[in-house]
Length: 146
Image (tube, rainbow, N blue to C red; front, side, top):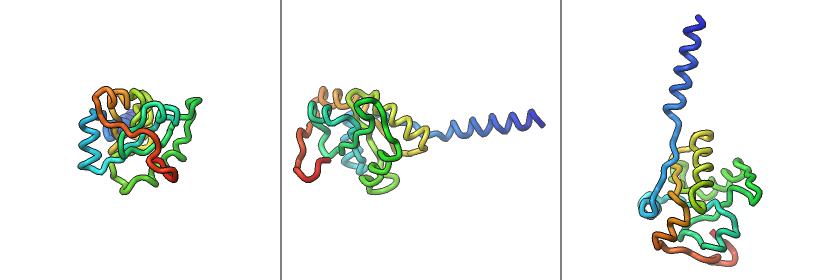
């Protein structure tokens, strides 16, 4: 009986792990394609200071995840993200400075929250800029800043 129970537990763990979602990594070109062809939602999770310093990807949304102290409120952030999404299965592409924070957040969303269609821009905004892609600086309107 103990062997049977052990096997059931191991099988259920294996099954859970095999169905876990994975974070997708995208190049700048893939981000552009997904934004254009798949209505992907590009979310810049950096801080205001970082947005001001480099600008943002055109048509991306500023939605800071980590505070300056490295703290975060996942549920509050998810609530704000869901307000931006046009459908439950809309692809979400996370952007940070170099890919570290977006990778941590992406893994949290896919592995702990079970979310699907989550991607990150490989090497972050620095690679985007290095590749010569367009950047939006400042806030397009005084009433609403994406």
